[in-house]
Image (cartoon, rainbow, N blue to C red):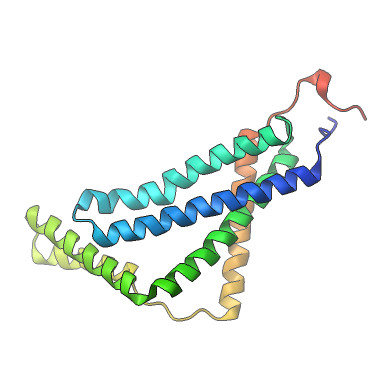
Length: 194
């Protein structure tokens, strides 16, 4: 089967632009959710926010931007071409959101993190007490909240490089899965001849 004629520069440029947009969406959703978790009084919101912010918003944005990228490059692409464009999109998004989160947490200081932790402890305790949970169950739940906010030691350069390499592998697999789902071969009469 012949490869579809596609402008590789446009594919890479489109992937990078969509990646930047995707990174901004993920970063803003994360920042908004931190502020909301720091100020909510409802346990249902505490449970739903990570699901919405960590799964639904990124998945919806990824699907929309994938379809947008395919349309931008002519509406058709092979698995290889789709993987290339989507890998660039996801790696740019990951890099932007990771750097953005790091800057956000340095600028906001430890106060926001402490406020969020205290609020989650308060909301969780209140919910469990209203459900008639005993003190052991409450303590176990609060231990999980505390573990989620445990102050981690600063990462060494080797650990940062290892984490980034692992992320690249995961991003490639995700790009490959998205490419398999969203590839669109042109009709036979439109394919380039060898």
